[in-house]
Image 1 (cartoon, rainbow, N blue to C red):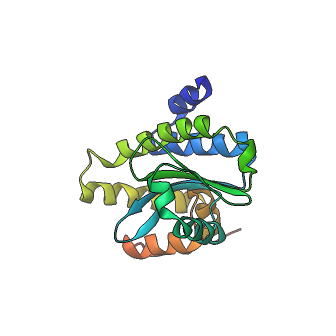
Image 2 (image 1 turned 180 degrees about the horizontal axis):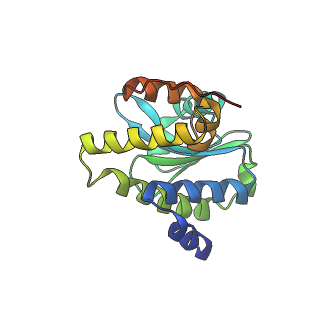
Image 3 (image 1 turned 135 degrees about the vertical axis):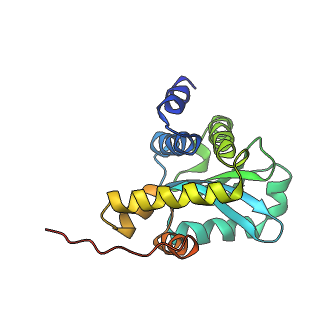
Length: 183
């Protein structure tokens, strides 16, 4: 847990601290991808934050969750062949790890670290109004796109989302794609 405290101190924002923790968990367990997910009554399972998440992972996680959501709600882990859902100490939030043997994971330690990441992530959304949050997300996305020369795939990898999600954000925040002249 000392390593997690160090990661929190490195993060420039609570969201960045949460991302650093997920990256650390990914590397520590040798996983293919990892994500924090939450359940919503109307939408089902939603990705909050992830690392190395692609569309296959999203589809797999949703299918695994859909196969037995009551098990997750009662606090049980749902184990697939190379994937695992672990409920954490925040109601309706789960950590999903893909590409590891679930029998080799320390599920309690994984849940503890993911809880810290989820609590850090919650701090980014609770005190801020929706309008200012949207504005700051828009500014962050534009800055990241400009820094990465509008390479959508690279930005998607950095953010831990799919390219489609980046395009959705461009539409939601009404960001027009800039032309980049490469030398």
